[in-house]
Image (cartoon, rainbow over all chains, first blue to last red; front, side, top):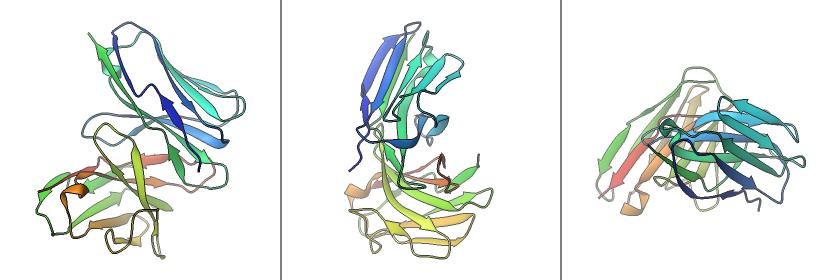
Length: 112
Length: 115
């Protein structure tokens, strides 16, 4: 069974601080997606990383895919209250063209 | 991307009844998925719905409890049958293009409460 371990599961920090969320696995993924979900809504795709070592930036969010395509991180610089939400990572299995393996989620609260 | 709508957005149901959730997409898609999610937690895949064939269910989910229809490439339904309080959850549909780097796009979810 492929597992995708996401940490931390809960994080509460002050506005302006930096944070990093990690997703790790012992298995290789063909791609990895990061989603953010707000209460009452479905997950919204933030980014897809495909190439080992790839780094993508989305304003204050930096996403990195590990060289071996087994892990990924999401770094938020100078967090804002609007960043509050549930962050989910999901890996696409290398042997499947559609099934995603989901991390447990990180509940992020940014305090003003 | 794709725009996905779900009906109903929420419902409160009595034990023993059934509820059918509809998922409509604004474009034709190959893969449609149904998930269950407890608030603030991760997603659990119930089944994959392919047009023209029977749905593929994940371990722990069976067709008698969660029958799925996929009559065309833009629409699917999930029925939660003979409901119990344990079925209270958020039900989400998503779509994917079936490619190697597959990204999924989600509907807003249906919040179900079973009394």
